Picture (cartoon, rainbow, N blue to C red):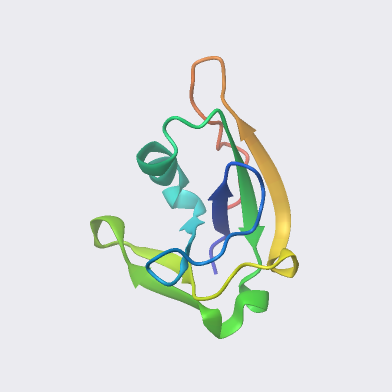
Length: 102
């Protein structure tokens, strides 16, 4: 399975929103997610999620543009997080995603 990330501004695992799930993205989707939902954020903390720990609560469903995105149907736990990675802004104002695993 592709690497799954949850984007935060403070590194705290999230609870489901009004839709009933926690939003996540595959690596290839991060640039779009950052642009659409975090354009004004000074920094981002990525949480790399463990699909095995998420089990059946992880569901890939059509979302933005009809593309499948990972959704987690429960609150995230610290034990679901394999890695925390800060993405500060570059001097050009972009986030550097070049060293992230696929």
